[in-house]
Image 1 (cartoon, one colour):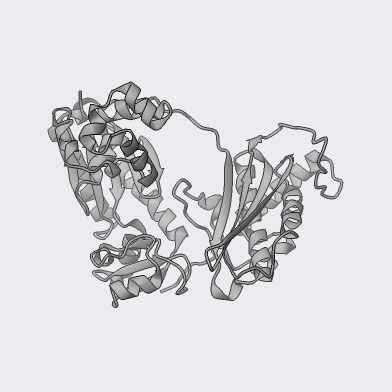
Image 2 (cartoon, rainbow, N blue to C red):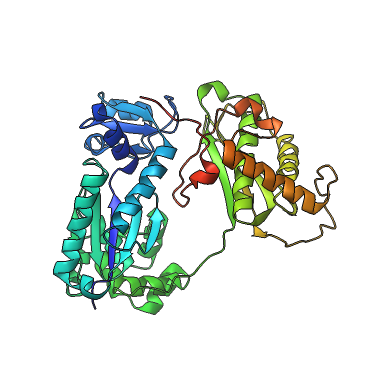
Length: 421
């Protein structure tokens, strides 16, 4: 079995971009925060900070205890997205990028002479050199090379930061045995416990299990897929239709009240609606979720007929908000999710629940109006035209980067939250 995949994982990505952009941060323990507040947590930490035990998810006050010299900066998502596209172009100049997997991960398919060990290793060094020269010395990457994407990702995690590890077919399975099961992508604490229930408590036990045993352990065909991936085979990719999309925001202290919260929710909804139309999808459910400062939470939703109309979805949001227990606790994180997504043009009559009605415009006219508003915002800036409910939060809820979503700057870059040095 030949080498088939080269996996590029950018180390401590958000923090590294900040260090590349701001020389004063280089060599310093840096924590990147979603908002500058003592009650939030790090969404990224530089390697200098990681040496003290600070990592993604570490709360600000805990990070200060671990490392009194910590420097905190506010996240700049638009900057990270621009770097992301630049890095893709740099890697693409060396070899074709087969698939972008996240904001800081991509995989390249090895073909022909690239599959020879020495050539694959030389290609990895070529990519690293190009990244240093064109992106900067603080944009470091760990590269994994293996027969398939799954093992290449595993290899990229075996030597950080700035490493390069090759797993060849003859290295399997022995080189895997030194690793814990949790090192495998897709196995978290719950899956680890489930495997232990099936007497699979080590990498050797996992590799020794047959297809049927792994299918039983996973409770689905995913167990058989894991069997194949561990042996270097590239599974057939299954395309899953998008089921939901949404936005959330950790509120800064001055917005932790019901009046500001609903304004931010309106802004989040309007951003989600624009994305919804860009995907040519419609939503059948609007969901609102609130996490309070004491870690309790509240959520509610409303079912609607398929629509991408911002005004109809706004009315649904307002109906949900009427059920919000305003005097319960102080809100910390809020979010809007549009779910039950269907393709444009799907229509279903709701015989039992009232539909939320926008002013009575023909459906074609409403669609044209929404698209016209989107075009204006894309051309002149995201806050050129917006519904009034978001007015008091127009400078809040900036673009964020989720694990499974890289923002499209043409649609989502609103210029909010850009921090000047």
